[in-house]
Image (cartoon, rainbow over all chains, first blue to last red; front, side):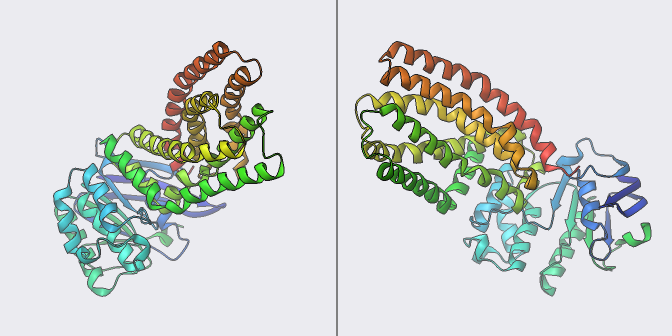
Length: 195
Length: 224
């Protein structure tokens, strides 16, 4: 469970949101949506513990919250001069989940290009590699900043299915987009309502 | 796990071979400029040559200052490390050792040519190479710490020069004073004293820099 109470955040003296209170239970998907500059990324970073610049309270029911969080920001967190395989293997090895590597490749059709460097990939392929990393890293909470960006329709569905599987396993997914989305029982939260 | 992270960090450096080569080219070019413009033979003023070479080596290492953490920060890799289930100290140590290993390898491979160019390639030069080798862990640790301080500073990057880089004076004094004993006072016993001081400095500063870097990481990765 993640509880946000009366969160207030500002950017350059402009209030992005105030009195934002949500309680998110395991098995939920929350979509924080709004236009550019509405504070979606900032709120996601606040929840992730990457931003201390806020007022209010965040409580969680996890003993070690950070170790449960898997964060996908605007930047993909991949080493550009290394191959897909070298990048994913690093995280798989750390979590001793190398056995899941093949599933991650096949889920996003990355097996044939796993020896390509990140610099040689398209924006959509890079996004898929970053999303494939979620498969090999355990963690109950996924914080995904605009996860569908640069993805085609087929892969957007795959990501939605992946999120579906995570929440069915008592996980929590908090994502950001520009608009309301409608799949499973997504709780859409318009950040503009809290200005 | 530490060795795996170390291997990965080495892989990252080697995959970006251009930076390693650029660094080596800088060292050779700067040395050539000195060799041709100042004096092609410093055999009568060996201590000047030692000073010039030490400056060039430190400058070449400083060139890596931006590369160490900034690239990882910009790519979002550091954010991923923030959430990964490994003690951050282990990651920092692996990063430091990979940096140190590549630095030692590149500098030690190029130094004989540079020393030859300066007319300093003689049996006594082994003292310079040894004391330099002992000072490199400290020099690299200071640059490593400076790199950590600088990766988010942007316009306030001058803080690095105020906080971290003045520390470089310490190993510089040790190396120069030690080599002064060899070339000017011709007193090898005193040279050993400076080697001893350098070992003590490494033993004191390396853990200190490690603990500072460890606590700084979480502070720097967050927005405040």
